[in-house]
Amino acid sequence: MVDRDAVRHGYDGMAATYAAERSDDGRDVDILDEFLASIPDAERVLDVGCGQGTPVLRELSASATAVGVDFSRRQLELATQNAPDASLAQGDMTRLPVRDGSFDAVTAFHSLIHVPFGDHQTVLDEFARVLDSGGRLLVTEGPEEWSGTNPDWLDSGVEMQWSIAGADATREQLRSAGFSVVDEWGGPNELADEEDARWVFFAARLDA
Image (cartoon, rainbow, N blue to C red; front, side, top):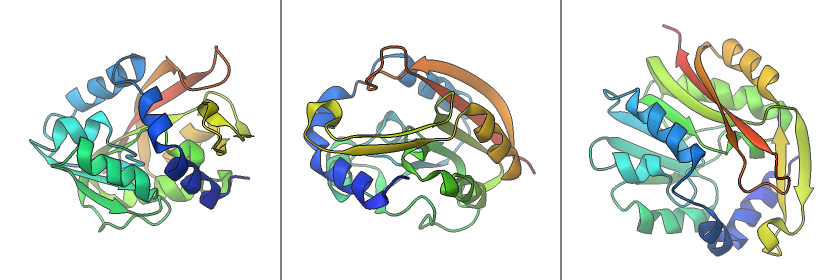
């Protein structure tokens, strides 16, 4: 099972390595851009697990209310540099520090996968809570259930842990939280140890 403290300490400790490995190009960012283009009227967007500042914060903070939440203090410190116009808060995905119905869209870009299996439904319920009626969600999962630990992720000397529920379980959990899946995309997992590792991206709408 994922240890939240291990994940938080991991992202604190490998901030520089993670920044060097991440890219603003590739299939992941194309999908994110496509999702953002599908919600042109979204004025309030919450990026959960924002890390050092995803394109959500960098691209939208000038034209919309863009808020990033992460539980790694070091990642948030870097986000203040990469997305200076965004609002940032430290918090846990299972208890988001925002009011009910506060946002038009939520993005969870490679963040749900670091939450223990038993809390995935709680997190998706939280996304539904903070969205306004008809709000949109983009969330990333793996295609199959898998959990694991890498004591030296990205050759950083830092441990990282994952709990991936798989696409079938995530579809059911989204429906249980009150979402309808609008679209799905597949894309490569460029930071995985296995060359054929992939992500599944779910775009969903909160039912009125």
